[in-house]
Every structure is written in C-alpha cells, then in structure tokens.
Length: 566
Image 1 (tube, rainbow, N blue to C red):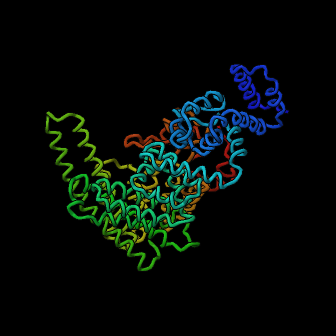
Image 2 (tube, helix red, strand yellow):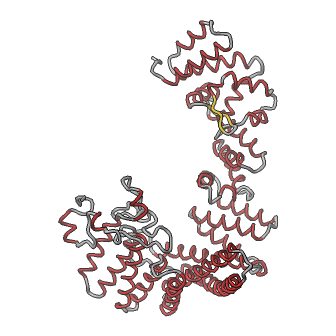
Image 3 (cartoon, one colour):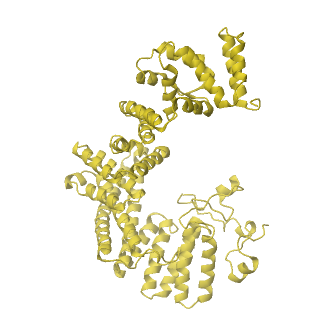
C-alpha cells in the first residue's frame, strides 16, 4: 500500500542507512515495524517514538520540546536559538540528535527546518493536538525573539509569532514600536511591507490599530529624535495610513509634520524641498478625500466623465479643497525659491573647473527634479482651481504648468496630458469649444504616445474628447470615440487595473513596442526620449484591429475579440 509513496520509500531507505551505520542493521524488528506502517503519518509517528525511546532517556521530553520549537518557527531555527530557548538541554545532545536524524532536516543559512511537510504534520499530530498547545509554542517563540536586538531574525519572526499566537496586544505593541516600524515599512522589501499590512488588518479586527500607531508616534516624538529621523518615520506612517484607507489619520500625520517650528522647516535646502513635497502630498490626499465625497455612493459618473470631480459636496468638503489650496500655494512659493537656488548652484558648479564631474551631474539632477516638481505643482494647483470654480486662476496655472513642462522636459511628457485634459475641461465649462477640442485632441495624442492605444488613461482621454465633440454637434465622431473607449475598458475587469503582458510576446516586441499591447509602462518605456509607439512600427501590419475603428465595422465583425489574426 505504501510502495507507491516516494516520501515513504526515501525515508525508509534513509532509516535503513542509519540503522546500518549505527550497528543495528541485523535488527529485523525495526524493519518489520517500518514496513507495517499503514500510512505516512503512522510511519513518522513510529519514527518519533523511536527518537523518544533513545533521546528522552538522556533528557526528559527532549524530542517533543525540540521538534515543537522547529514546528512553530516561520523560517526555521538555528541550533544556538534552540539552545537559548531550552537552556537545560546540552549542546552535545542537540547536535547528536540532528546528526542521528540528519535525513529529516533541511539546513539553510544556518537554520534547521523539517525536510518535508509530512514530518511537520506528524509532529503536530503527536505533540500539538489542541489549539491551546499550538498557541503556547508561538507565544514562547514570540517572547524569545522580543529579547533579541533589532535585526533580520527579529523582523522575520517576532510579529508573525504574536499573530499566530493570537496575542493581539503584543502584536500591536510590536508594530507601533517606531524603531521597529520603519524596518517593516522598507520600500525595498515588498515581503515585509505585505507582512505589515497583514499584521495591521489582523490587529484591527480586535483592537484600534490606527490609534495604537498614533500613540506609538507620540512616544517616539517624546524621545526628541533628530528632525530628519522624525520626518522620515512620520512620513512613512502617513503613507501607510493612506495605503490602508485611513485618510483622516494620514492627514493628521501631515499636519503634525508641518506644524514643526519654522527654524526646523527652513533649516536647509534639502529640508525645504522635503517640506514642499509634504505639502504637495497633503494636498493630494485632501483632494482625493474631496473627490470621494463629491460623488454620492451609488450615483457614480461613467468612466472618464468629469474626472476633475467638480461636483457636489458640503461646506466641510470645500474646507478640504481650501486647505489643499493653501498647502499648494505655500509649496509653489517654496519651489519657486528652490528653482532659483538650484539654478544658481548649477551655474556655480558648471563654472568651477576643479569640481568633479559627479558633483556637476548631481547639481544638474537636482535642478531638473526641482523644475519638474515646480511644474507639477502648477498643474495640480490649476486643476484644484477648476474644482473650486476659479476658472481664471485655473487657466493661468495650467498654462504656466504646460509651458514649464514643454520648456524643461518635452511636449509629450505624460504630465502634459494631465494638464491639457484639465484645460479641455476648463474651456468646455466656459463654452470655448474650439479651444477645448484642441486641448482634448492633444490629450489623446500625448496619451497614445505615452501609454499606447489600449491603456485606460487613453480611454479617459477619448471620453473627454467625445464630450467636447458632442458639445460641438459632431455626434457621429463622438459616438465613435465612445465606442473605442468602451472596447478599451472592456479589456480591464477593474477600471484601475493595468495591462498585463500576454504570454506570447517576444523580447523584440517588448523592447520596440511593435504590437498594440504596450504593457504596464506604456510604449515610452519610462524615459524622456523614447517615444516609439505601435504606430511608428507599422501597427496596421501586425494588429488585426485597424485604427481608428469605425463603429459599424466593429459591430459587423463582432468586436475586438472576434477579429481574425493575420
């Protein structure tokens, strides 16, 4: 019955080798007991009993205590960690145990774990039959890892052990420790970020996790850390709250950072640049909250219609826009000063012949980034004015932002599409339809170049153009634009989803953008100079669906999915 089980046969061969090497090769009883196992669990249960009969005579409950600790670990334990937890077990006995059963263990990076899942199940079945016993093992390990200095092992194990042990207060105490939190929220480590979000969700089912984190940052602030360290940690927490759907707590963190003394906020060029960025992030957050409140639940507008969100909302909602406007105004003044300082520093660096090239390149990069941020704030401020109904101010800021992007980057930058769409909406609201059409068509062109013909951003640009064309009385072309938008959005079950590369793409198509499917980053490849699109690579010869699509042709052929491939 067990002869077809590869795990059983492998373990049986390993046991026979160990019996032969230990001088018990002629003991027929062990062979018979191994062969009489009805299933793999009973086989390992007998194996554990054998270990107990030998090692428990040296030390009571030796096998149970060691295997339960290994069972409870997340990534395994080192022999030193086991000895630290089980202080009464001698090292020689532990090493002899691992050597005698060496085929049952998997060693990696100095840590031991079960070589396969079946042995883990057998340990759980024999030693940890109840949930209370399992919780006890996890809490024992959580208490041990809490005593370790902050490092990789503690980050990997401590919070996970408290979660498995259902110790919600201990888990909350762990993640609101702000010498611990920034390491979990490492932007370069996606696994730990996912762990942190999971811990937050689990704790929030039993305790107020957001309030616990706010109390933790208050304790951290009471220690009077360096301003840069405080801003880094507080911004991490603000971003985390925003990602977890807690905009109120996120805004509170931004206000706490921006309420620091003026001598701290203006202490250096880097600090002023950072504070300006915080003000922009705060304004984005408040605008997002207003957009969510402006459209009543159940009355959402169709995709692409009125993306500026200039509708509805009470007095408290407009207070959000006013606060966002104040932050953007302050950020704009700061960025204007910083651009002048960066230009002066750049000129000084270029004129200094003794300065290394790396320093000159750094000065150039700082100038480019500062100019781009300045132009971005102009665009944000213009769209915010549009939401407030300040059309004259909105047009002024949007035109300044468009001129800045064209001067400092290029005319087909993705942000140019955002600004031109705002201008199209503004001119449409003011019944300047000729200007609105020009800006809407430019938005379509820029987003086609940057994202490709099948990206949702391109679909939203088509919807804006359709609205303007209908206002001009061109219903036929407006319907064609809406038909193209519907076909694009039909590719995405979720309007916020991004394109996924189909499995039949080749390396050449990925690098050249030779097909209509542009993938996640669009056809520009994330660089300023690469503006190749499927049009420039003879898209019509490689894609079955022609561009543009006439509505009557698509209906006769059965839509995009039924087009024959050439």
